[in-house]
Length: 260
Image (cartoon, rainbow, N blue to C red):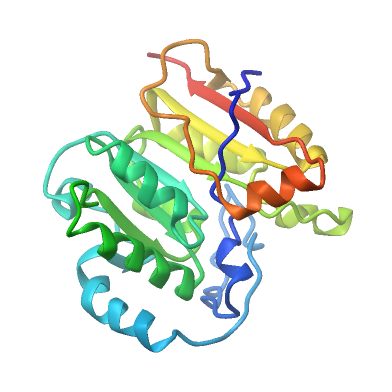
């Protein structure tokens, strides 16, 4: 499996959980053949700070949406046709904003459940608007990423999917809550264009091994052995620093969809 040197990360899928106690309450279970409705995130309550709320009021209507059942008109939302990348679990937006700046030709959709994390992402976007590299190619969805993939993303419409530091749910009895299981791999593979890329990073050794085995078993995916259509560089954050301080190895797992 390819590994990328000079590891980068954006913090866990639950990055916002490190900074706040607010979340989105999970919607009632729908149930489906692809993914049992056991969420991979924890639920907490809280509130936005006053500056976060002010930014939310200014920017959410244009840049954000709640997850729903209708197919996204991606071209209409971004006002252009461009390669589209979905980041699952964007936390406070550290990676999403940096990667949007680095890839202005890409439409980036960030999915997160934690409202303060989303508000911090909006603040990060807003701070770029008066710079030489304004972020205009990033949109945000609030809710469960599996619902996004199932209901809002058309088959073979994504150039890339990024899942950086998903919650490992380390206790065996909680493994059913892990996001990256066979059914989710199948769903992601279905939504990727031929030649598209799934990029996963984790600092949890046992989860990395399970992810690698499961990803390699998905028949539509193969370890990436061609030029990637998206960047694999990620900004360093405090979470990677903590991982390095305790000696954790960060695994980069990258697959491409067969059929290009």
